[in-house]
Image 1 (cartoon, rainbow, N blue to C red):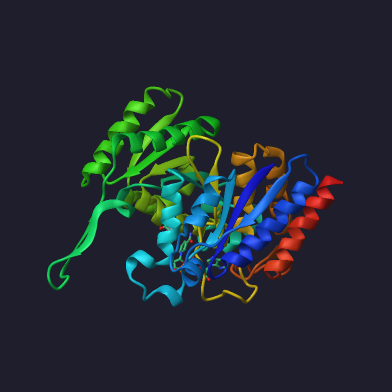
Image 2: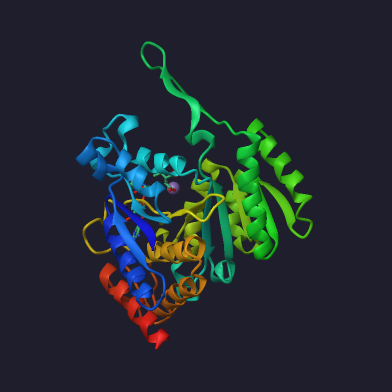
Length: 361
Ligand code: NAD
Ligand code: IPM
Ligand code: MN
């Protein structure tokens, strides 16, 4: 029996995780694998019940699970809270507590969605890369991080990395590149930052163990530009925590919507946390408008990386592609095709499940 912990979180989190759980339940009906789902609170929802964004109960449950499926955290309701009881702290806390240092964010241009990207068709077509974002170090976790002075007139955040922290995530990126097109782009700010210079050193050292992989280094400002002007050049990108956060939202423009970007947060064993790249989207929460595909695609990654169910993962991905090819999509994707059919969260989920079922018979 495998255990998947579901952390719906806030805003559209509960809507998109409900969709992904329905897809997982449906796929499990046709498989030998027994799975139980256990739901726990995180983020603002946990603050409301327990006074903390990451209750011990949630950590314990996650630590005894095979995989975690997370929606999103945060929202205007909790914005006025002091920093250490913000919903976002729950998310950072669970990533750290679980040691999930490598965040894979695949960026794929779906044929049916090419025209929903504001970028020219020729730039977007055939784009297929993965951002490997370091997830438990850097500016997000460095100490001190504090306000200073009698009147709080100074602030400090610290960007710290150990060589080991860099090595393990870069190693993951090389391994991934070996399974793909064997091209690795490392993104840093080595013209300014000491941490980036060590990052570059580590990449060059590890490159010797992967002679088949073509490695190049890009400075983050230029990489941000190239992500938009020449995204076709990329296969695997590896970068530190904050750069990866920013570049992945930028990359979502290629897919047409943040609502299409899944992610997998991994460590050295098979346990992982799977979540969409987007946030809790308070502006559309509770309206049935949320695009659940990023979370459904994250559930596919969960099957592939944590449960060894590659075939089932591909089944979900194929169904998503087919539903989009039939012209169905949620309102976040703006395509001006005549045969466009805009549907809500539940409807697109039903379509994915029905397509999977049809494909299995
Ligand atoms: P956001 O990603 O929540 O939303 C940005 C825009 O994209 C909004 O217009 C939203 O409606 C749209 N959008 C996002 N996901 C969508 C989906 N699945 N379907 C349709 N439209 C979608 O970013 P934000 O507004 O800057 O942040 C809102 C809150 O979410 C903040 O509290 C932030 O801290 C939090 N956040 C959480 C996570 C996470 O839990 N992983 C990630 C990012 C932001
Ligand atoms: C993400 C989010 C989080 C991050 C926030 C909500 C803490 O933006 O998962 O991309 O910055 O990691
Ligand atoms: Mn982000």
